[in-house]
Length: 486
Image (tube, rainbow, N blue to C red; front, side, top):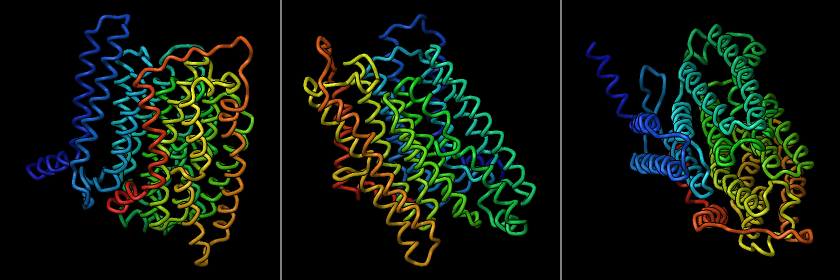
C-alpha cells in the first residue's frame, strides 16, 4: 500500500503542468457558473484574458523544467515524461496563448465555456504526448475530440452545426476503427503498453499482413488528428465554418500531439511501414494540393493546405532516422507560427472586406500595405520558399529522405522527394492567389474598404509574420531545443 502511494506521489511530481491546468479548469468552471448571461463583451474578454494568463503560466512553468530529461515512466507505464513530451507541450501551450490573443484581438463574444473547452482539449493533448499505453491514449484522444466537436459548433449557426456533425461522424468512425485495431494488437501481444519489449516480441510472432492491417487501423485516429489522407474529409468544412481562432488552434495543436505518438510508435514498433506510410504521404500531398487549386475561400484553402502539409510532416516519420524525426519536428514547429499567422491574417482581411472570399480582397493592399506584405510573407512560407522558415522545414525533410535513398534505401523515398518538389511548385498557384488579389487585382468601383485595426491585431500579425523570417535566419533557435530534448 505504501509503495503504491509512493509511486503515485512520485508520478504526480512529473505532471505539475497538468495539475495546474486542471486547477485553472476548476476555477473557470466555478467562475462561469456565477456569471450572468447573456454575456457582455467585457466579460468575454475577461474569460479570454484568464485563458491567456493560464497558458502563459503553463509556458513559464514548462520552461523551468530541466532541458535534459531522462525518460520517466509513471503510473505503471500509462504515461512517460521525457524531453520530447516537454517540447511538444511547450508548443501546444504557445498555440493556446496565441489562440487566446486572437480571441481578444478580434473581440470574439464567447462564453467562458469556450475557454473551458480550450483548456480541457489542451489537457488531453498533454496526456497524448506522454502516452505510452493505448488506454491512456484512447482516453486523452476522446477528451480532445469531444471538446473539438463542441468548439466547432459553438456559434450554433447552421454552417457551424453542419461542420460539427461532419466532424463528429468522421471522428467517431476513425475512433471506432482505431479501437478495433488496438484490440487486434492486444490479442496479438497480450499488452496495451506499446513501448515495452514484450509488445514488439508479440508483433514479431504473428503474420506480417495481420499486424500491418491492425497497425493501419490503429493509426486511423492519429491520422485523423494529423489531418492526413484518407481521414481528411472533415477538414475543409470545419476550417470554413468554425470560429477562426479555434480552427487556428485545431490546425496545429492536435498535429503536435499525434506526431509525438507516431514518433514513439516508430521507435518501439519494429514493423516495416514504408509502403503504407509512403502511400499515405503521396495521397495527402496530392489530394491537398490539387483540391486547393479550385478554392476561392481563404479558410477552405487553408483546410486543403493542411492536408498537404500533413503529408510533408509524415516524411520524417517514414524516414525513421534521428535526422528525419528532427526534421518533422522542426517542420511542425515553424508551421505553428506560419499557419496561425495565416488565420490571424484571414480575420484581419475579413474585418476589412466583410468576407473570407479571395475576390473580396481585391486591391486591399493599396489601402492596407502592412497586411499585404505580411500576407506575401506567410504565403511564401506556406509554399516553402526562402527567405522563410517554411523553406527550411521542407528542405530538412527532403534531405532526410534523400539521405536514406542514397544509402541504399527503398526507391519510394526518391518518389516522395520528386513528388514533393513537383507539388511544392504546383502549390505556388493557389498560395499566390491571395497576393494576386491583394496587389494586382483592382477593387470594384464604389467598393471602399473600412479598415480599423487595433494595436493588438497589428502586433499579433507582425510578430507571427516576422517570426517566420526570423526562424529562417536563426533556425538553431528551434533546432537546439529539438537536439537537446529528442
